[in-house]
Image (cartoon, rainbow, N blue to C red; front, side, top):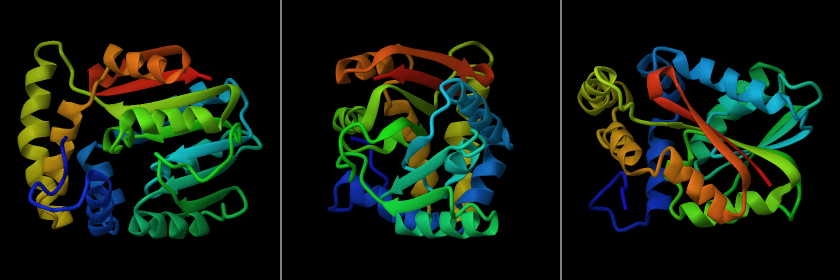
Length: 239
């Protein structure tokens, strides 16, 4: 199992929470710089896909600083509940929500993807952006997400992936495995966080492998498509 702090005694979940707590104050700026701002386009595309179903109640798992939740309220009438295991990221997200005057449409709570604190069939849809690879137990997390979505509800996932076509594969590897960790260490001041990122992406069962995990968890009509030359993948599934 890939973890941020290889010599630490805690499990992956606690390590991920500690890592995001340590970089929460710089996360947004760093994320947008290192992705060249393309992450905003990916979120917009995912929410446009979700809006076809007109969900009202949306659960944003691993919400972080709430960027995906904020994008989701562009769906008319939608209300979003975001959960995350990092209090530091949640605090940064709450400040952003207050600044944007979205307190009446978005609420953020400390919550674990593998033990979601809501009843069965609670939400019209669920979303995750760049968070499923951080689950300690992926299959347990997917089963929990399925449980809280209403029958017929959508599940949308954005996740970083590695392109396979030449020359983008080579260019991406140089950037992602060398330049990005170096820049991340300089800006975030956490030498582990942006080394963990490429390692966790490489270990994640992307593409058709993730589709199989979705189907095994009980989701239906699972599909995926690559975005921006394959450096991101958009997954959709239905309960």
